Amino acid sequence: MDQGSSEGLVAQYVVPFYLDMMGTNALRYGLPLLSAVAEANRATTASDVVALLGDGWRTRVMGAWYSVRVGGADVTAAVLHALATSRGSLDAPPLATAAVVLAGPDAAEALRQYFTADQACGWGAGGVIAAAADHLRRHHRTATPLPRPTDEDRDTFAALIDIARRLQAA
Image (cartoon, rainbow, N blue to C red; front, side, top):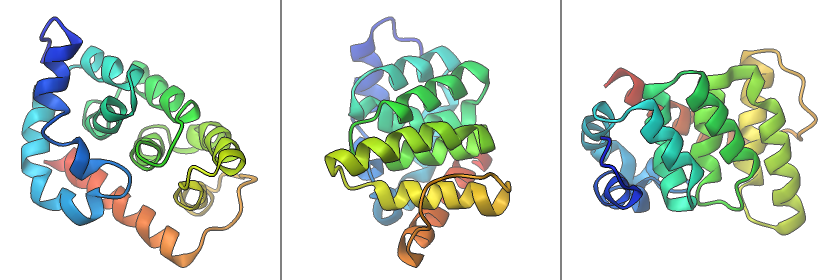
C-alpha cells in the first residue's frame, strides 16, 4: 500500500470504508464490507498502519481495523497510543477492539486513559470502553478500575471482537 503520500493512503484505504466502520457502525454495516476491507488490508504494511493510526479520527478508524490483521510490536504500540489519545466515540470503539485483540492485558492502561477522558468530556464511548476492560477482566483475569458495563455494551463489544476476528481470518 505504500503510496508515498498520506493522501494516497487515505483515498484508497480510508475513504471507501471509514463511515461504515467508525464508532459501532461496523455492527450494522461492516459485515457486508468485510471481504473488501480484508482485500484492502492484504496490501497494507505495518508502516502504513502505523501512519494511519497517527493521523486524525478517520484514519485511526481504519488503522484500527487494519491493525488486527497486520499486528506486530510497532502496530500494537501505535494502537495503544491512538486509543489513549483518542478524543471521541468515532474512533475509540475500533481502537479499543484492536487494542484488546493485539495487546490483551497490556491494553488496560490505554483503556483507562481513554475512559477517564471520556467521562470528563462526555464523548459517549465510555460504555464500550468499560466493556473492553470487562473483556480483559473475564478472559485474561486482568484487574481494571473501570466499572462493569451494561449487558448492551458487553454485547456490542463482543460483536466488535467478532468482526476483528473475522478480519484476522479473512
